Each structure stands twice: as structure tokens, then as C-alpha cells.
Length: 120
Image (tube, rainbow, N blue to C red; front, side):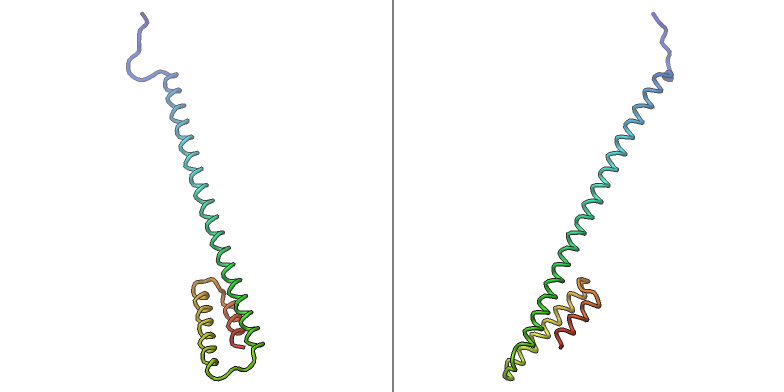
């Protein structure tokens, strides 16, 4: 019957324990890294989607402002009563542009250009 050593493990036992700990640490760090990469990718995709939506809103607002400016130039002089509603409509459009500017959708230059188109 061989004598069994009591107390600390031998060299092979210590190497096996070290290998298990190192393997577990590698697996955990790989999982954490992969999770962080997925999270960053999803955040980037969300930002790209929001930027695309903001660009679409700006394009629509600019197209509407251009169409309104063209319609205002092409329209003949109207009686006094409709002129008041047109002024209210213009104020509403300027207010809408100001809101887009305040939200950061329109830059200072874009806001100034769209407002100048409305006022001309």
C-alpha cells in the first residue's frame, strides 16, 4: 500500500488547479468582452438610426419650407382676412423651425436659411 502524502497537493495537482483557474478566467473574460462589444455595437446602431431619423425630419422640414416659399411667391395677392391667417401660418412655421433648432435637429445655419426663406 503506497503511502499517501497529507497536506498540500503535489506538483501535478497544483498544475491542474492552476490550469482550471486560468481556463475559467479566460472563459469569463472572453464572455465579458463579447458582451461589451455587443453592447457597444447596439448603441452605435441606435445612434445611427436616430441620426437617420433626424436627417429625414430635417429634409422634410426643408422641403416643406421650400414648397411654402414657392407657393407664397406664386400666389397672387389675397384679401386682408386671409393675410392674417397666412401670417399666423408663417408664425407657426417659424415656431416649428425654432423647435427643430432647439432640439438640435437643425443647425444654426440651417435654421437661419429656412427662416430667411420663410420671411422672403
